[in-house]
Each structure stands twice: as structure tokens, then as C-alpha cells.
Length: 155
Image 1: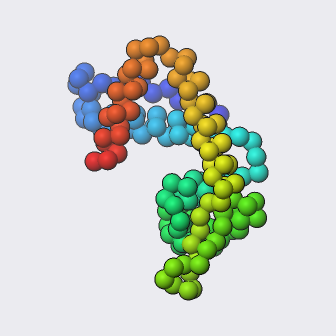
Image 2 (image 1 turned 135 degrees about the vertical axis):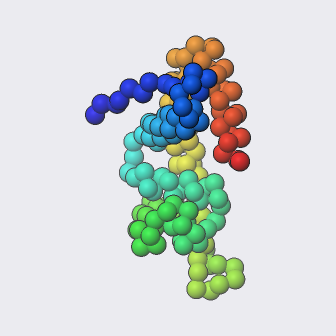
């Protein structure tokens, strides 16, 4: 698989709609970086979908299967399969819903939290290694960009 080279167009150079071009370039770069970071995971039996569901449970806390399916943007039958595998692995547990006897609440088990922490550590180590290969000014520029992207994401 080859990656295409993107020529940067800077808004101050009169490239027409600079914000639209920057949006495209940022989205592309963020998507590619996210894909690479997601691939930097310990080799194991968990799929990306299972790790994503476990991550959602760890970050959001206890959720119903429907809430988890909605959060993960998958159909409930798909989430049922994912949760089943996570339960078999001892990473997720079910508990009765406090107000609706027909529902259950899903949460990560202690083992699930450990697996999640290992996953996070692996991703952070991969990214830290890549960042250590940059120059000081490049890392400073990324630190400033990270602050700006956080602000954009909150907006």
C-alpha cells in the first residue's frame, strides 16, 4: 500500500479557501495517525472492535448494551457478540440494572481494566517513540497544536 504525498497549502499564501484545505489536511493526518496508534497494541486475542468496546466501558463507566452499541456505532446484535467474547475472556461483567429489571449494566472487570491499561501504555509508548525522533521545535509545535485541537474538539 502506498501513501500519496500531500502538498501543504498555507492559508496565508492565498490558496483560495485556506480553512477548507487545512481542514482536509488535518483530517487526513489525524485519521492516519489514529490508525497507526490503534495498530500499536499488544498482540493478543482481542480484536480492534473488542478493544474499542472495552475502552468505551473504561472511559464511560457502566453502560447498558444498547448504550454501548450506540457509543460504538454498531448494531445491537453485533455488540452482543463483542460483549460475549469480552465476557468469555473475563474482561467485562454484567450486573442488574438498578431501575429496569429487563436491562443489565456492563462494566469492565479488574482484569479488563488491566488489559485496557496495557493497551493504553502500548499506544503511548509507540507514540512517544515517534515523538522522540522529532526535533525540539517540532515537538513544541505539536504541543501547541495539541492545545489548539483540544479547543477545537471542545467547541
